[in-house]
Length: 137
Picture 1 (cartoon, one colour):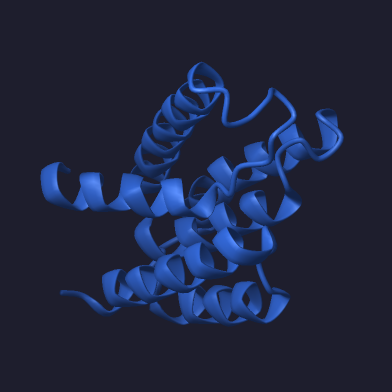
Picture 2 (picture 1 turned 180 degrees about the vertical axis):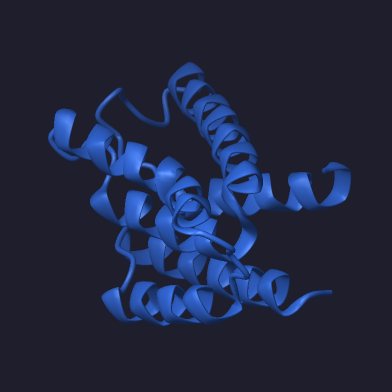
């Protein structure tokens, strides 16, 4: 396992725990992960770096447009994750996370355990997406 993947696993697990219990992602975790991503992420050019943070930047814009229905921390977490695993893998993890999160939301609605306004932590779904991507990617 590469150092980038190990760091991604550690950060995803830690982020999932924080997000699940407090629905917040600590700034220290994001800063530490970003610093690790800068040093471990072996990017050749500025365009590579931009490509890596593009999924997270899109989520940050979506957070702004939806007035934080999707938290800024989720977008920042994706920017950090993209630095570690690369833009292509980050997009795959994001799509899988969105799909799994949507399924969870539908199940909550069907069983009347939540409403449309129920807040669901997103990083655990990113972790699930990363697991799937790692197994079948």
